[in-house]
Image 1: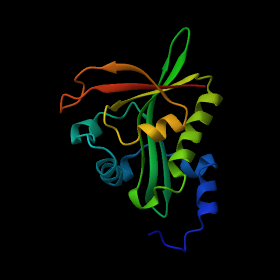
Image 2: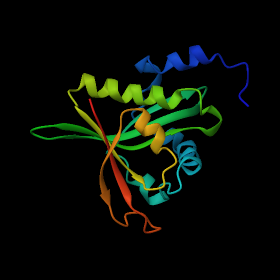
Image 3: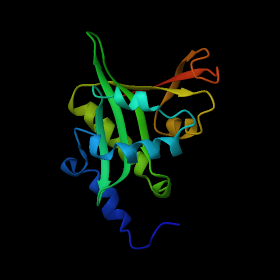
Length: 162
């Protein structure tokens, strides 16, 4: 159960103020990010994956040096379309079910709108427990990648057009 001392309206509105959320380097928080990832995904990134993420963009929601949630993405610019490729969107377990993931997604949509990006895409495990959440937030399954994951399960390409 969450502490009643948290003012959720105030906390949820913090994400709307960019200067409180944008952190260009995840380095000071990498340990927290790894733990949140492990508790969020059946197939979290391994240590090598965390070392090779320098080219990604990061949006961290941090309060009192505690990471509440984060997104990690790349922007791919093409001639016909620009795409935000979402690698991770995670919320610390004790802060889930309070709209924080939705606010992180809203933040990504805002990034897209400000930069002329017309699509958000990601790949998820075929048994991803967040598929319903993703569909609720405008994503549609558009492709299947056979045996993508270490357990030989398929990956589902999810896309949200803006």
